[in-house]
Image (cartoon, rainbow, N blue to C red; front, side, top):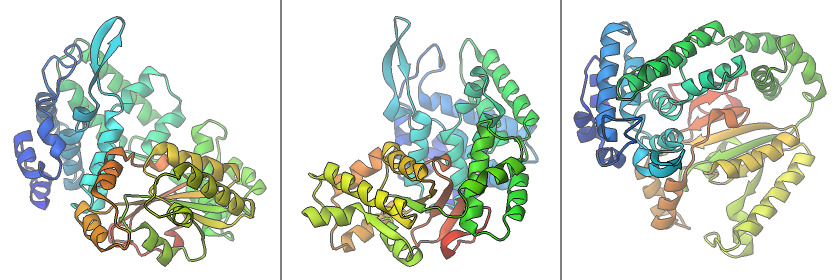
Amino acid sequence: MSDIIDHIASGGSPSMSDIIDDLGDRLPLLHELEGTPQDPEWHAEGNVLIHTQMVLDETYKLLDADLNGISPARRAALVMGSAFHDIAKPTTTKEREIDGRIRLVCPRHELQGRSYLALQLAGTMRFPLLNSVMALTGYHNALKKLVLRNQSPGAYRRLSRVVDLELIYWLEVADIRGRECRDKETQLEHLEMFRMFAEEYDVWHTQERDLWNDEIREALAGHSGATIDLVVAKATSDREDGVIATPEEAIAKSYGYRDEFPEVVVTTGLSGSGKTTWIGKNLGDHKVVSLDDIRASLSRREDQQNNSKVLRMAKEELREHLRAKRKVVWDATSLRTDFRSAVIAMAVDYGALVTIAAFHCPSEEIAKRNRARSHPVSAAVRLKQARGTQWPEITEAHRFLSIDENGKLLAMHGCPSGVPYGIEASDDV
């Protein structure tokens, strides 16, 4: 895959046909774009493949005219984001009645596309590029929503935590230009308003919150890294919600919780991605709540009949650790947002610092490890896991760690104090 990435980064302009030829085996949904229809009022140009090629063409025009000084890495991210931004439409497109008419819609195709890329492209490229492409895919429809809903500056700051706002703006310009619809000019006007607000709120190129991180670190110099990270995380959230306006307010609010609090790590990743091994290596001072271990104590690890009871027992065990303000790790696949959010909400209610550890492991490696496991997971279960995965967003918890198949840190968010837990970091960190 590096050949086409290098080709794009060095100025190449491959067509969707070229990209499908190169990546179709790894991303089989690319083969389904042509057979996926779109609503004729929103996309009169035709199917998803036609639209995607038009977006790609518009992206190349922007790169030649407005973005001819862009770095090779950002060029590659923008082109790949353009090629993959609607990759989940084949699995999400459905009919829905709107105002008495049957329309074609594709709800949540952005985040489903992000999840799909997270699994299918794991280990195929340098992680900063994959992370950027995932973000462009996952949030490309968020821009106009901010404008249409008249969102606060905090909403723009929150979006800037998960995606490069300048890059996604250009992707959306290409996305709107690369379609046929009645309101094209209006949608382009919405994008210009987004850009104007992003510049006004200082999140277009720079992120003002980093200055807050420095002030909070300095004020809490004698405290642990976990304390600094928790205070910064709460400050970031409070500022985005309009609760505070200065770092001094954040520091003052922290007096009530910063001296003693539990810590919770929530793992997420397919079976065989290395979660339990990583826990044993890096979180030896944490109590472990393992759904597999609880399931084994009741019957067998692979037995799914008692899942409700297993979950109740696990939550009660977690609650006991939270009351005692311990360090604890929730060892489970945690592939669905609702499963994670229930655990995270409980931890936050007890004042915990919550960290998500998300495991990126190539499918080939997962299959190899599964064959060597004492309790292998069936192919049907692994397929169900992959299809049901809702890859976590970095705003779900205070800290977010991306871990590779060898247990190395690929990226971290919400860690102004530095790499936590003494994790070995990859060259990209």
